[in-house]
Length: 589
Image 1: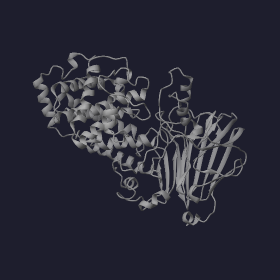
Image 2 (image 1 turned 90 degrees about the vertical axis):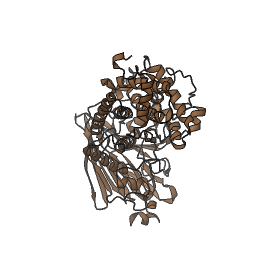
Image 3 (image 1 turned 45 degrees about the vertical axis):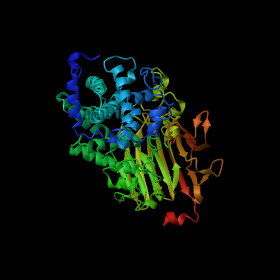
Image 4 (image 1 turned 60 degrees about the vertical axis):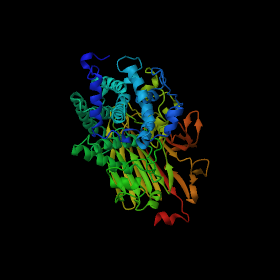
């Protein structure tokens, strides 16, 4: 509990509180009445939240009628509890208040903020998630917005005082060294939360220091989270999108003005465009669920080329290069041809290749993984995110394999076999080893062929991968695996093909699939010295042949394993080819 000497607002008289309310109401920087400070990607309508309870993702709908037993709500699930104590349930009502001006939506949020503050602002709790850094930062954003909106819309002195009590406690928590971790995206939410909270009360001199420290932390976060080429360091296009757009909001509101930092964000916006698949969804590498990037819900970015793809050609300008290489981040992409009009985007061939290990955050066991989209459909896919859920006990032996979460399917989608890459002795890639940074090699276009290279060291063995893509025609993957400690190993190459493809031949060799919409056939030819296992689809014991597109869901895919047994060195060569048919002219001309 904070001491009286640490408090700014507790001793204010009612007259002082009212005077402060008026000063906040007359302020306009940053524009805290704007809905950008509240999450717009929500499924619940305003009336469902206010009248029927709050529905967060796949969790049960939660009754938020007062009084609330804050300590026990959502206490059995860390992610759910973080969203509750981050006040995520306020987003829809606040947006509806901003849209309609109907004060009952604002009042509903104020009532729950006051209830929360009375429980936690000057009392302690055994519930660690209440002051967890992610909840702290996200709640601070919403607290700032409530103070600003309330000050302009008749908040009572009692309500204002309760909100200020919460501000006092947040100041104390922000000052703790443990609250700010620049090594993960959580550090961003702490930095932006304290910056906006300080700016909301900038009329109070002591609060300007909170905002200034927040801006310094934001600068640290941009430099540590976004690499020099603009890539986010946590291996996930979804976190890249989320953090980049959040930082852009801070720039748009004048909270970040450093030209070097804004230049890095422009590079991040350029990279985001390469992460958009021809079907309009974000490429599902790492912890990335299905995100539709062309549904109009996302703000335009600092990149004209990305805006062109997000708007299906209505804004921005078309890209001019078909190969995107980001050597610091370890990403390489092919989009061929680059669309020049709305109808052309779904017809592009697309390849996304990831060759990096920057750290454990959101990192799947997926070194040198890739995703391939061609002839208007997904071809080679990967496991997806599935969601998080409850964590494993701290003494679980599964943590030694890099897993944090208890759900077996969540652990499966993180595993190496759920991605298009290589294992040794069937073991997952070690995510506890020292970060190696980017492993991307030479990536270039040679005539009609795009050639991408990468290398990763797995401690005792190395993997070199070369991918050769002829858009609309074929894709060849060469995997060179070699023991560096003289130990013979069983090496496996894993491929996961879209379940929408129809298997023509049930046994190897000579596997082939029919594509959707009479788009021909896809065949797989493998080199000598390896055996083919599969394809396997929707296996439960063990889990294999699955992916998750949206959190909490699963669907079948075709899982294939190529194996070379008891060897120190082997070169796998796998070629996926489209058959000749009447439609080939559209792709081969």
